[in-house]
Length: 332
Image 1: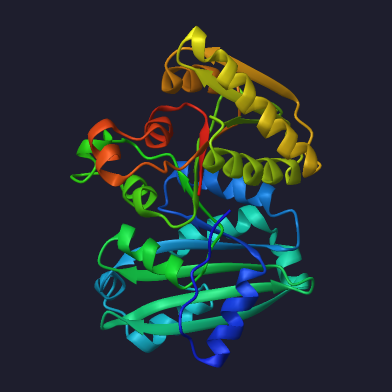
Image 2: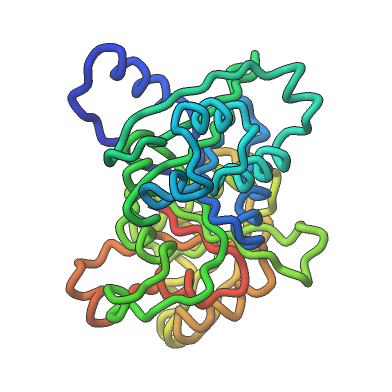
């Protein structure tokens, strides 16, 4: 679900980078709100395969740990890595870990490794604990220091790479042309993310979780490629796949039907069964939002339009991410 970017690294880091590229890595961003833990539940479902790793991330402001209780740095680090000290963010990460693995299984089946790095002149710096299962799967708890959350999240991506970032739903979402000022952390990261982003939303009227994924396609090579990657993910999670295409007018229905058939044929080659297909006539954004209410996830492809056009007219994928009541996956 991502095009990985290679950098010049020393041999040891290069081996680590190459190994990570062979895994499906999910970065789940936690801010302590209940909404952010909806994303943890989605990650848990995706990570049923042992080839999938989960990294839980909390970004703390520079020096915040030292202002909390005036603790001696050495003791603070030691206790934090032993999870004996409730520094800001630690309790949030521990809660996420408890949603992924129960305490008994963690003690019996997972080996633990901790690490620390000095950053930003902050004495507590970046800290992580990695839990690794004998089957190769890992869960990482990362407490990262940064001037502000969005830059910390993007810096963490560079330490990856990652295939998917997951966020809880933000409290607000600005129009594309106005998103440069006062945008939420989620929107800031989504705007420039190099990989796919899932905004996870809790739907009160969907207790069964069986409505599946609505995969949107317009027939372009970009959207067909995204549809294939998302359909494989849905298939992996054992979720039904429904293909959707919008026809702005009745005259455009034939194009929408071709888009559906092309996507269906490509999925058949991948061994992914299509549960249903839907074509709606009307404004694409409106029809996607209305139809998407009946699904767990709406999958849209990141816009391939140039940045100026997106700034002036807005991005369909961005607007759907901000306005949908369902979870939305923006596939890159």
